[in-house]
Image (cartoon, rainbow, N blue to C red; front, side, top):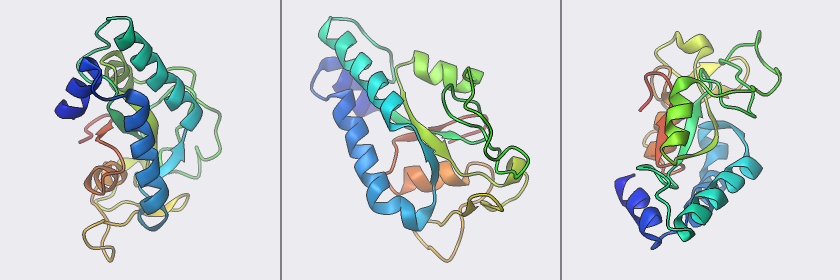
Length: 170
């Protein structure tokens, strides 16, 4: 995270390239892991392009400049639905604003890639729900990462995103 942000802020790395690297890893591994349950590629690209433009203009976009992150599906992220791992909230409309956690990460220059899997309402010690199914541990696919940050943990551990964001997240 630190190396990525420093590289983007210095202009040695591009926020768009870091996002594309994350999206490529998601494309290669998410089908077997089920870490990400929703992606917003278009908005993530717009955000990454804005970070790169700010760097090119000599601005500092923040301490997490260009760092791709997954948002726990318990937290709102503008433009993305929040399903909370529950049939009750499944298929809901995109949120119109960010939770405080997501807002702070974005203000620091991080780029929201999509939503990560959670147990229903974050209640269980394993990551599985009736809407999105089981999330697999990248180190041992016969297991699931534990608790409400299971999707984020699988994503970070497998290199799908640099970090996770949300209440109590990684």
